[in-house]
Length: 240
Ligand code: 16G
Image (cartoon, rainbow, N blue to C red; front, side, top):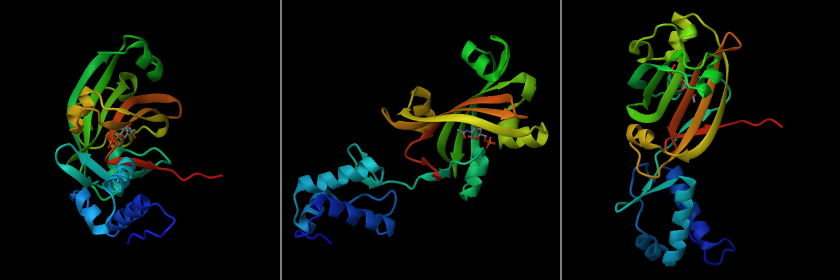
């Protein structure tokens, strides 16, 4: 598998070999990767070379290092195509996973100037603030903090969020969700993200802020969602 006469660097050949083993299922997600020593002995190559290959694969997210435990094959990420407004429940259904929510809090708060402007309500007016953990097959994937204006969603209860909120908006409130604007950035998990997503100190997250509208121009939710970067990724098709 490793050809020392090849012009391809040895670390790269080892990387390709491990990658192929993962793709072919010889190394399964969650499994411990053989030790550096095992690779040095098997291929008669230096520890530095093995380390470089493993570093590159860890950086790519194919391997995960756990302090004091070793290096493991990473779980497959949930891959979401970015092409329209979908709810978490719909996304998970498409992937054959069971969506669930754990409601942390639902409360009435006074809109701060930033949120008031986003939701087109008066500053300090009473709005809903909801915190939910979103789970796929019982694994926490995302932590959402949403703000919703009462003038659009009215009086809401926790049970309206137990399943799909978008289903409630469209089918119970009979509103048409028309579009949304969102940005996506990578950052580090904050205290609550770590707690609810079961992450360690310094873990990366994919942070999404979304403003979603009904009836064309009426904003009905402003959401901050922290996705686990080890479990979720976006896919785009780019026309030219
Ligand atoms: C997604 C949306 C969130 C929306 C939720 C509704 C992003 C970043 N966030 O998580 O804005 O509230 O879906 O899901 O896409 P539900 O209908 O399953 O409650």
